[in-house]
Length: 453
Ligand code: PLP
Image 1 (cartoon, rainbow, N blue to C red):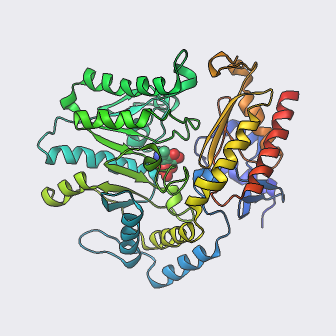
Image 2 (image 1 turned 60 degrees about the vertical axis):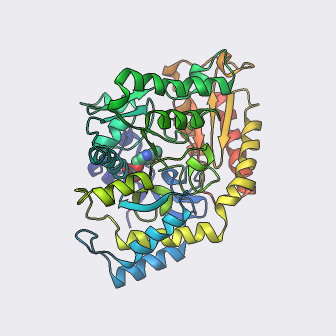
Image 3 (image 1 turned 90 degrees about the vertical axis):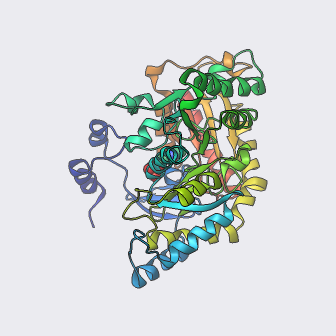
């Protein structure tokens, strides 16, 4: 096998990475991950690290699950591929569709399969447009999303997303997609209680609907908790009010659960935790814990009935929709989540433990404030602490303190993501309370190092 340096040279010579500055990458060399077990990863130099990000928010059951490997190998032997177009199906896809319907909130009996979260959101958008056509209101085409949202990297995903850095790189968002502000208390909530702010932020949706014309608006899309945007946890009043506004104007609600689905927030689906009744639930990541690519859209009764009873063909689908190997992996992954009661464990045990640990981290001189929900958490690095979020003094942007801190984490055995000066984690759901403590101790050590710089 190649040594690390050779791998790095070949990597920078040939591999164009997602969301990566290749100038910086080739100067430094990519870190080569070679093995995983539980919550730990090893790189090609033998360094062991805690994966505080579950890969990319996906390895919910942790690494090294040989039962998934075995199921996948067996399915590959029996039937590695067949499509689900034109009246054909396969055994794992049927079983998984039934399983997902049993786990989903009430009213979700149908699922459309994709291979990724981006494709799931593209699918949701096409379903929304098709739905309003079938309902005789084809002029309803506008979909409202939020600034700083992440909904994927396909043209529709990146358009639905509210990442300015993505839109800036060409011709996005596509027509009919509009954005409102995110429910970010730290940025916009000065002078308000959190619950007042939640109602105010939900009100921005109603303003946008009225501005666009209620009979032109098709749907609203949001992540229950914005993940890639920095683990932005909305006030408790936000989502119920969003639901009331969607109901008032009859618009569809899409709950993008690519991150929040499958236990991340201590419920099977994030919408259950947030108190909404969505019409569509795009999912991916945690459905297979990332072992094999799979995504999809859970389709609620309202849309499913229109598509099935009025629809004829829905002219949409992917070669790998309902891929038998991916569906087999998902079934085994969901069995593990159920048998090990991981959702309950997050709700009752490890989630509250992580919350308490992050509350203690908030006392660190570098930390302005810290929040957590289920098995995800974030903290803000600040120049000067203050009694309220709004009075903390941030660091100058060009210091890139978040990146400095992230590098310390990287060098000291814990992977954390930096979103500006906000440091976030979303560890595997199998992480124990003792491992939460181990992770948080390393984080504290790296905060000290960052402070010393
Ligand atoms: N939606 C959300 C909320 C996500 O976090 C992501 C990925 O991070 C996506 C969609 C896109 O999923 P994928 O990368 O599988 O296309």
